[in-house]
Each structure stands twice: as structure tokens, then as C-alpha cells.
Length: 161
Image (cartoon, rainbow, N blue to C red; front, side):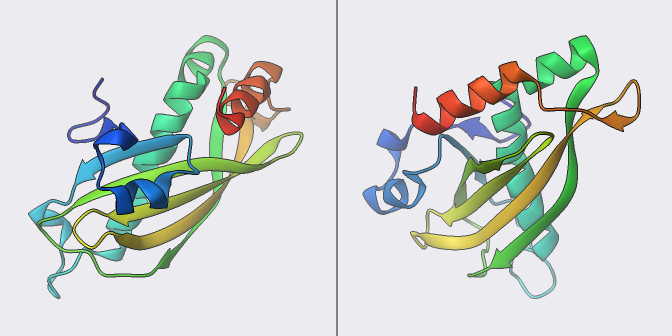
């Protein structure tokens, strides 16, 4: 299954063991190529691109969770409240990165996601991020409680069911 131009869901069994170890605790892992155009004048991947990689993982998680379908049907979906990223290593072309995504905290109307960006060439974590998302009714333009169906799916994903 393809999601976006160059992002694919990933089978950890196809990874180098060092990379697989770094993403083993993440229920959703997507892989994408580092593009030449991702680099800046200093010949390393621009900081904003790391946020894009993390976004790939977040959106894939939403897709697998069923949040995308729910939003189309009911208008209820996630809205990003904040995001951060800790840059650990500079990435450059050519490389491939795998982005692991998991949910580490669920509250009544919000949840926190954690992401890791792993370089296949370096076999190390290149960045770590967190994002807070709020359950939002886009038709009413207001936050709403997290739907029970989404809560159950998060629990299944995070337990590995």
C-alpha cells in the first residue's frame, strides 16, 4: 500500500537489525527516501523536513487507526495543537529513513504521539519528536471528546493486538 509519493508502510523484518531494533516499540513504521531537494545550502536535510517525516508517520497512523475515514463521515478528526522535534543527527542524501510512531498518552479529548526518525545509512536515531493532538469537530469548529472507537483502536495498536 502506498501513502504519498515515496512513503510506504514497512515490514521490520526487511530492515537491517540495528534499524529494526530502534523502531521495535512503535506500532506504526513508515519508510521514505531522503530526497536531494530535502537538503539545504549546508548539504544536510533542512530542519523543517524532519517535521515532514514525522508528519508522514502521524498521517499513516491516523489512516491505519481509521481516523481519516471517521473524519470524512462525521467531521470529527485530530487537530495538531503543538509539535516539537529534537534533532540528534544531520541527515543527507542519499539515505532512507524509517519513522516510528506511537501514542504515549490518551486523555478525554486529546492524545500525545511520540515519533522517532531513524537513518538507515547511519543506523541511528536522527530525530525524536512529540505532538499533542486534540479531537476536533471540523463541522462545529470545536473540540470534542475522543471517539470511543478511536480509543479502542489506539489501545489495540499500542498493545500490539
